[in-house]
Length: 543
Image (cartoon, rainbow, N blue to C red; front, side, top):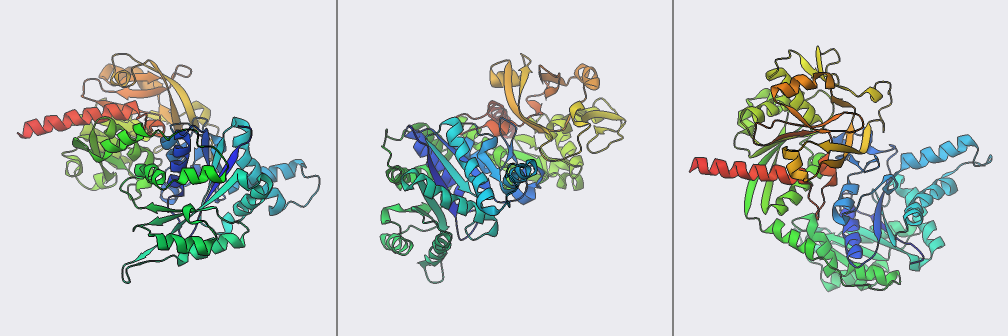
């Protein structure tokens, strides 16, 4: 194909309708038909990236292979497409303005007055087109964050308007996602919010080509006709997106609605081949027809907002399906474990995961969770901060190192078993300065982690400032905690295990970022297998 086509996904009426899932589902269908597709997210906030945002504000911060801290929607893109994203796949208003201001300071604009139009919109267009020109994709799907009408989104909508004029309408498509609410009092589906949302988009000079309507009830022909007529959209381009039990059903629902075929027709592209979604259907069948179930306790500091651990919970769905097992993830706030006996919350679990995070709040509870898992020989997985808590707990309760801790929480700890990385010591800025992205790790044979991967060298994504203090490594290994994964270049301890227990693993990296529908992460799969065995053992003991 000589020219990249561009698909824009906007939203109206309300946020959180699922633009990211619709974008990922459409990309999945087009990929299944033989097209090379990627997705990018335009976020209207002024932060450079979500790296400095509290998880309560924005959910988890997702990290790409090349070290970009991005919106969690990029996780959905990777999980659906089974392909990595990059720095270029997430654009924020902060990044756009920073680039324009830097150019102005260098004199690139030759004394011109720098304005939203054309300079900001030109920078947005450049970043939209960059993926297509740099990587030669057949199609780039661009999801615009927020809703139409937000002040923050106006420059993005204007950039889309300009791009459509430049590209020509056969080279671009606008999909507008809105809500058709159901009023139970009158028993009616109401289309007026959609009409007003499209009107607002039209006021900004953009006519949507396709409408995707979120609904909890089936849309009849009359509703589709009415929406199409009042919004200047053909009736076959009014697509229903009905509520489903799992986001992984959405691609199949969009296939039924022929969303991909409508897009191909509007872009004047051929239907290369039938969409092969058999592996996806097999996965979905397992998700809906589990043979067994287990209970995993996720101990974290942000459990009130499940999106703070989105990649972890999705990784459990992937690995659960692989093992024909429903993984019931029970969110346990670590501060609760500081106020009551851990056994009250943790007893009966088949596995315990201590989650990543930052700061001192809830740390004591995380240490208590590690201690309970170790002393009761319950399958355990610690991720990033969770791994560091396992190191601290072992130092305090096995090695009897009084005051052992991390210098992140206690700068003057007498035993800094977790300490700031050498290259981080001179850094004062918070944003984008951690150890980020993919790094190699060599695995020790005869370990649970080697059994999981089946190879001796791996690459995983990181997001941290602190690390295991190697001054204590010999002492730890002599007492039974083994370093089974080491960075070959720096000697950084990436993985710790207690081989005398059933399954006790801590990893400095974030395995959840690389788990996808078609490639569940080996660490999660191995952890789930260990939890299944624990469940079977508990059941046989009860009998």
